[in-house]
Length: 370
Image (cartoon, rainbow, N blue to C red; front, top):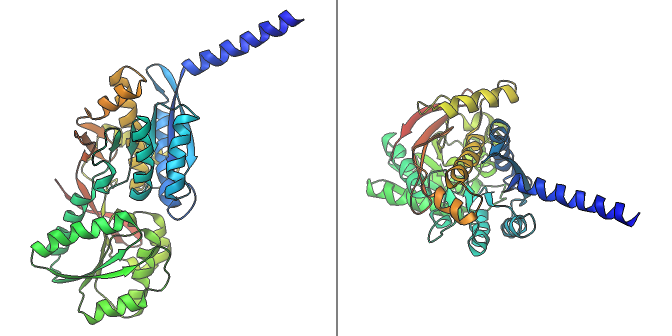
C-alpha cells in the first residue's frame, strides 16, 4: 500500500513539474479596484484579448497571474513583490498610474525582473532603471503636445488645474508650462487634491484672472467635476486634458459639460496609424464587447502584452535577464496603438493622438508626431 501511495505521489509531482515547465507565468499588477479602477479594468480587457489571440510563447502556454493593487502605491509595490517571490513570474505587466508604477518598478528593479507598463507616463518611471519599460509615450512629449494644441487653438491665457497628490498630474503640468510659456502664453495654476468634490473657488479664481481655457492634467473623476462646475459658474471656454480623461466615466460623469473637451491620447480606432495587429485587435474587441469601440487603455494593455511576448520570443528564453535585454531592442513593433520603438532607456517613441468629445463620444481629431 505504501508503494502505491509513493507511486501516486511521484506521478503528481512529475505532472506538476511538467505543467510548470510547460507554462510561462507573467504577473499582471493592475488597479482593479479603487480610485483608478476604470483604467485597470479597461487595460485588463486588452490583455485578455491579446492572451486569447496569442495564448502561447516559445511553444508554451502563457499563464497570467492577476494581482489587484487597489489603486494604492503600497499595494502596488507589494503586488509586484508577491508576483515575483511567491508566483515566480518571469516578467510583469504593470502598473497603471505613474505613482503606482514608480512604487512597483522599484521592487522589480531590486529583484531584477523585467516590467512593462501600458500607461505610466511620468519620466521618472524609467529614469535610471534597467528593468522598467513602457509602451506609452511619456509626459515630456504629452505636455509638449498639449501646449502646442493650446497654442494652435489660439489661447492666450490658460488656467492649469493640478492635482498635487498625483505625480502624473504635477509632472504633466510642468511640461505643459515649459512649452506654453516659451510660446509667449500666459498661464497660472489652480490646485486641488485627489478626491476633492468642490472646485468652485478655483473655477471662479480662474475666470476672474481671464482664463480662456482650462488645462486639467488629472484623472477622469476630477476632470469631469471641474468641467461641470465650470459650466455651472458660467465658464464657456475650452478644456484640454491629458490621457487621464480617456475613460467612459469622463462622459458618464461630465455629460454635456465635457462636450468639446480635448485630450492627448494614445489611440483611437479612427486614427490613420492602423497596423495589422490593430485591425486584428479592433475586430476581436468589437466582437467581444458587442460592437463597442475600444478605449485606448485597452489597446495599450493589448500592446504591453504583445510587446512582452515578442521580447520573450526574440530572447528565445524565459530568463528575465534575456527578456530585459530583448525588450529594449524592440523596433517598429506594429501595435494596436501604432508602431512602437523602445529606446535604451525603456521609453516608447510614438505619436500622440488628439481626441475630442463630440456628441457624447470620443472622436478622432488629429495626430501630433515626435
